[in-house]
Amino acid sequence: MSSNIERLTITLTSEMAHVVKGAVNSGEYASSSEIIREALREWRHKRMVRERQLNELRAEIQVGIDDIEAGRVQDFDAERIIDKGRRKRSDRSPSR
Image (cartoon, rainbow, N blue to C red; front, side, top):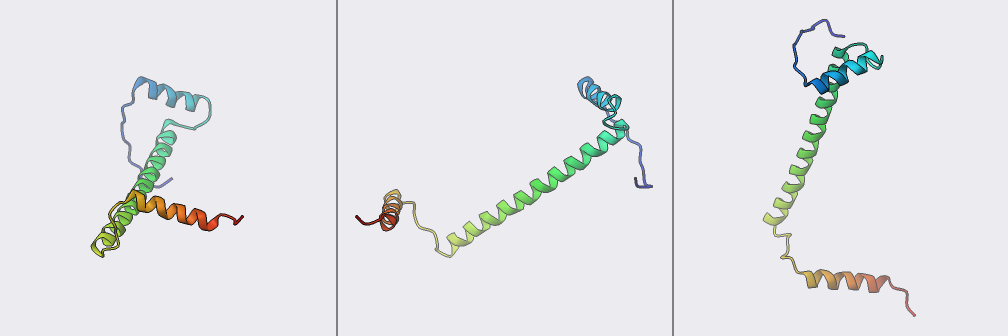
């Protein structure tokens, strides 16, 4: 553990405190501090993953915006899409 240790006081609900004490009493963790450190590491990791996913989404949105600005987007036409799918399906169908 780092030599830079700072003591904090935290407040938990009775249910959370019971869970923490139970994990220590069962020997799963050596101390309540160990549980809190693990929880904070997982929380930090979750935040990093969420931030990465958000950045990926922003990049995908930017691709769409760039496509619109470059004129690479067509109006939605369900019939055109259905016809295109039918043509692709008939091109793959075995001849009889």
